[in-house]
Length: 238
Image (cartoon, rainbow, N blue to C red):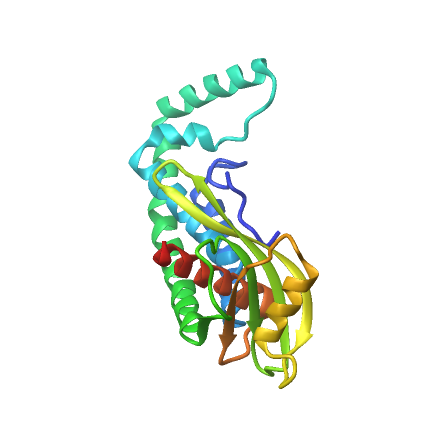
């Protein structure tokens, strides 16, 4: 599988050499993906795993939470018993600590590589409003265009807000409406007017254009970066 399991640290054999092999094989696939300038899903996965392991280093009791949970009460009690035995086993805990000490900097380096690529892609993208932006801009349309500029993907978006353990986070739900062609008669402003006529539930929508100066892998890179750009822009305007 391309992805690293959420509970890879405690799944199966807890052995430093084995876990090192599992992690390095995963990071090799990540590097190959980054070499193609394909950021997602690997970049978000790296952030997830890095934060998990740092949390485990800070609080070893969280290791229990990383074990796969069985639905039955009997199995859950057995898991708790096994965990207590594991905590009391210095050899196992030393092995886990060795894995953490190796894995955390490896994940951090890969995450930095992905972040550098992300920043480069973002620097090549321009976000601009299409027409007048209404006061309520948490729902509307996003146009994404990259070379050749004659093709534009039109998405309907809605900002979502959710709470994690530390802070309130924003996301962007999108749905592709259609793909059209930009030209002198079908400008971005004209595209917005067409959407207003076709979808009466948004009579005065916000609309934004994300224009990339370079061609990037579309779904794996440009779309996620464009979504994040729009979220950042909307957060600043509130």
